[in-house]
Every structure is written in structure tokens, then in C-alpha cells.
Image 1 (tube, rainbow, N blue to C red):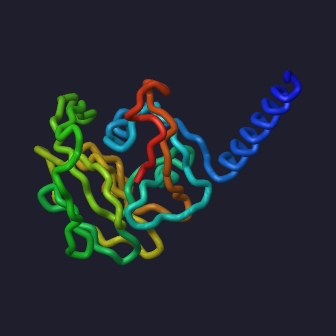
Image 2 (image 1 turned 180 degrees about the vertical axis):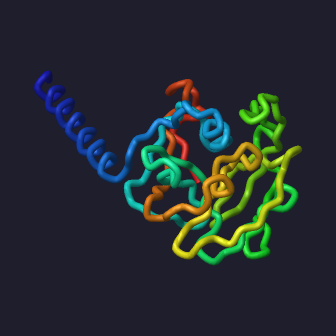
Length: 210
């Protein structure tokens, strides 16, 4: 009996090791850093500081993807944003609403919770932001809409580049700040293993990231 138990245990460990090896080859585990206050709020609400996520090792920037790219201003750091446009596209923010080539990204009031409170690093004031679901690239993802302090802008994306936008549209750290990014430095963030509270937080555990 004990021999069967030992064989089963060894087989289970072997299968688990193979699975972990496959995951490691396909994905890069990454913990969302919290050493930059602006970056920390910009990734909300889809991500939060100390989330442990899986980042695809393949490179590229498809429409609507949540990506990690090399920071154009600091090659040793990463930026995170949602891909909204590519070379030649016109990106416009008017009254807090995103337009790409004159078309608005559709949204619906379906987030839970409907409002989020965050401290704005630029003003040190608490801001109440509206959470909405936005449709980009055929998938819904949550965004925090700009409230007071929204600035209008209009940009034509450079050829061969990708334009990324923070899900937090007010407290952003994105292409409005550092211009377009090289898509060959971008990798899709696809899965959250667990959040800052650890494995017991079911809302942050084992979630697909769109």
C-alpha cells in the first residue's frame, strides 16, 4: 500500500514540475511594483500594487491588450497600459472620453464598485472616480473615468509605434506622458495569480486580465 502511495506522490510531483516548467517557458511571473506613486495609481482598477501576474514572453501589442512595455524614458523600468492605437492613428481625449480615428470607445456603467477613491499623487488629494466597462479589441475591461482636472488632447501616433493608455484615465502614466512605445518591447499581461492580500482574497485570485 505504501509503495503505491509513494509512486502516486512521485507521479504527482513530476506532473506538477512539468506543468510549472511549461508555465515558466510561456510566461514571466511579475509583481506589480509600488516604488512609484504615479505608476501605482495608473494601473488601477485592473491591477494593484503587489499583484502577482503572468506576463506572456512573446512580444507584440494588439488592440485592447493590457501590456507591459519598456519605459521609453528609462530602459531599466516598465510601463503598463492598454493598447488603443498604432502608427498613423489619431488618438483624442475630449472631456475625458477616448476617441480613436474619430470613433468613441463604447462604455457601460457596469463596474463593481461603481466608484473608486484614490489619492492623486500630483495634488495629494483624494479623488472619487467613476468605474466603467470599456470595449476595446472585442473585450470588456474596467477603466476609471476622468473627473475634475481632465485635459483634452489630440495626437497622431508615430509610424511603427503603439499608443498605450492607462486604465486610470485621470491619474495616468501613459503615452500622453512619454509618447508612443515600441511594440516590440511590449508583452501582454494575461493572468493574476493572487493580489496583495495573498491567496485567501478570492476576488484577486486566479483571474484572467483583459
